[in-house]
Length: 256
Ligand code: PEP
Image (tube, helix red, strand yellow):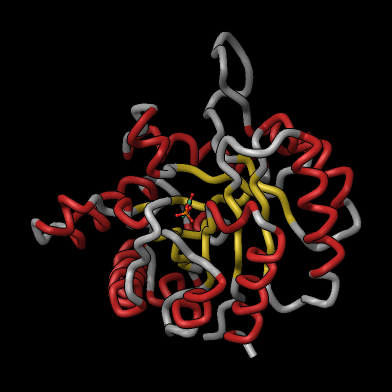
């Protein structure tokens, strides 16, 4: 089954509103001719609405970087699914390793965030990935299985269609160390088999699995050409318009 490639830029805690607008103006202009790849940007919360106003008539979609599971209330510092939707998001990232590492995110809280997003009409990029220590101990597949099953617990067949999984080995995020395309392919094929086991082979085949971890213009094509790699979740390289556009074009070439 041909899965549509997706390239998402996770800006993390970078870009003021002014910088965000400069970046998306360039992206909008230079990706006008690209229709075969889904493009997403995930600005910090403060820039979501201004970015949405610029991107309104473009095919570039917007994602939040995190979401809380309650609709409203005394949850200082959190943002609800409806708030993201209202500001212009179609997507939200959950379970990023930086959230797991620095903000106490667990498989259970990732699952709660994921399950709250769908009813509000948000699609989800759910991140999983092993640390270097876990890889060296030979625990990679066990960690991926635990994280995928944890994120998807109680998620129905209809909701899973709205979920994209991002395989992001923690040791490759922001380090300049990219997984080899063989390592990525092996992990993605395994994740696909876990999803097929949880749902069915059809769902396993149709679920998109992105690779994330130091994706750059120079390694994107090699990664995206692998059978089970359906695009990328890009951090640092998504902050530079030309680099991000080159990654999107690599996805386009891989899908043709
Ligand atoms: C990320 O933030 O999801 C990421 C993969 O970062 P980087 O591309 O900078 O490694």
